[in-house]
Image (cartoon, rainbow, N blue to C red; front, side, top):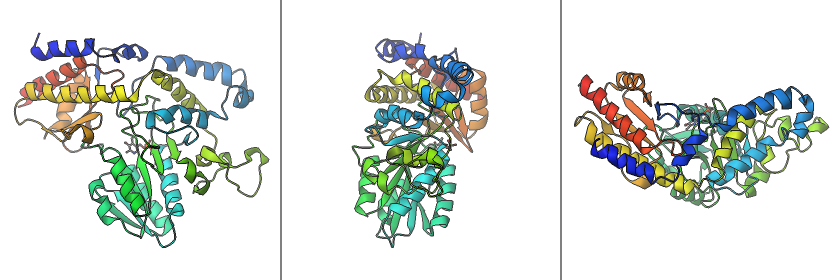
Amino acid sequence: MSELAVKAEKLDAADELSVLRERFVLDDVVYLDGNSLGALPVSVPGRVDDVVRRQWGELRIRSWEESGWWTAPERIGDRIAPLVGAAPGQIVVGDSTSVNVFKALVAAVRMAGAGRDEIVVDATTFPTDGYIAESAARMTGCTLRPVVPAEAPGVLSGRTAAVLLNHLDDRTCRLHDLSGLTAAVHEAGAVVVWDLCHSAGALPVGLDEHGVDLAVGCTYKYLNGGPGSPAYLYVRADLQDRFDSPLPGWNSHADPFGMRTAYEPGAGAVRGRVGTPDILSMLALEAALEVWDDVSVEVVRAKSLALTDFFLECVGEYVPEGRVESLTPAAHEERGSQVALRCPDAGEVMRRLIERGVVGDFRHPDVLRFGFTPLYVGFADVERAARVLGEVLGKLA
Ligand SMILES: *Cc1c(COP(=O)(O)O)cnc(C)c1O
């Protein structure tokens, strides 16, 4: 056994989260793609079966009340809340992240004072956020200013209405300074919207603590909600009355069953709703969130950093010199729960890794991405992934 394999064994033995692996359906593949689609929690299939056969099949329409379907978006929002540092009553679950980015960004511009006609957007963002920001800017008569997050403070002014930022750059895996950037946006009198897709469930976010205005995130990555599981929208409690949704559907009405002609928004997180919630996905997500019942995000973060540190150490040991270049910041405060390695033939390399049971993903044109979900990835997995990468790269060299 190599020195690193021995070290991995010791780290796994000392890892208090290692027992959580039993809560997921896993096989002998090293699954490092939980930052795209989290693994299936053991609790989900039985719950989905009950929701379909009993709640829908037998109770039918009664389930909107009796099975708690109607209140699910806020109830599940409150389950996500502690994972992102939010007090209850501020998060609603529903729709996709893309749709929630739209709601949040247009609402942010509407909240900003008169004379503010610029939207600042993270230029390195996940494409969907950029496309939606461009459309939101056109709709609200704003000018769009794309900048890299670190340079955002420099372009803020009395004309800035809203700022849309990603907590994590999903290509380089750089973590942005949520607290500092939020403070800078507030100093300029503007409204900030954070996209938490790659941080919720992987690290503490501290939405309330840092005074974030609005935030969105998906639930199928580190929250393991399943393919296409609904996203969430956070609106800080004191801003909810001013949240003027560009998609004011009947589900967000103060009296949805009054079927009134005139729209009157409901109070609280409900205001972020649009139409009938996707109950099957939503209740699968609710079962998936049970995994977190006795888990602390701080402990998850500590393990995540230990995993990525150990991966970089193993890559340094096993991968031929100069064959890959890490895009991931070395400083812990600038690192998310994934590692990006630049490698000229990344597409072919990832194909071979997957063939050999190490699943990460490839980002065009030359990036290998490895996501480390602390709930079910262990140190022996990390050692194996780096070793196989070294073998594949040695052969391709
Ligand atoms: C995954 C991801 C999305 C996904 O948006 P969908 O509407 O769920 O497809 C959006 N933004 C970021 C930053 C992401 O990482």
